[in-house]
Amino acid sequence: DTGVSQDPRHKITKRGQNVTFRCDPISEHNRLYWYRQTLGQGPEFLTYFQNEAQLEKSRLLSDRFSAERPKGSFSTLEIQRTEQGDSAMYLCASSLAFTGTGKETQYFGPGTRLLVL
Amino acid sequence: GENVEQHPSTLSVQEGDSAVIKCTYSDSASNYFPWYKQELGKGPQLIIDIRSNVGEKKDQRIAVTLNKTAKHFSLHITETQPEDSAVYFCAARKAAGNKLTFGGGTRVLVKP
Image (cartoon, rainbow over all chains, first blue to last red; front, top):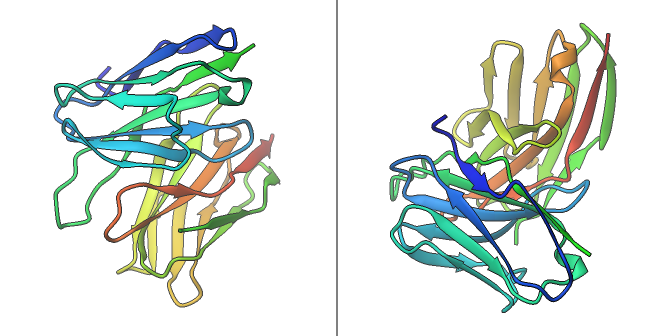
């Protein structure tokens, strides 16, 4: 399977614990996005990387959230001191963007569903 | 920032009938409008997209129309089948931007 993969698919944690999610994009894709989706809502943008550079962060991304893409390939999203309000599906998407053309299609992974008790 | 509204939130159709989902966007700078289908427990999958330099695009049973003046776009599914049952999301992206802004989703149920 050459699509976007995410690990784990499900995570249950207790409030106050730290969690880390991993995303492996489609090979050769230079952009990687993180979105959050709560039940019954559309995905909301959190942050994105162009290669290893984090270029934009949403106001939704509090200081408890941190994302990395150290070698421009896979990415991790860490949530520290989890709260019940962090319970959601965390989606990763990747794309091959050609600067200046506006031609870019985002392909989503299956998501990691987080439940904070 | 961009705001995308999507209607209806739920849609029930008889197999073989057509389904239409409508979205409006707020930012006239948006120029790319994809539609995603999300099945239970899965991530969104792109089904069709349209850029602002065209007014309509078709792919087999699926079509999307765009009215830039009115800032709205629609998804049309013809000859619906039970496997079309899913949640559909519209989205918009600005020309100079990267992130997608999604609508709230439409749950489509196709009754056999």
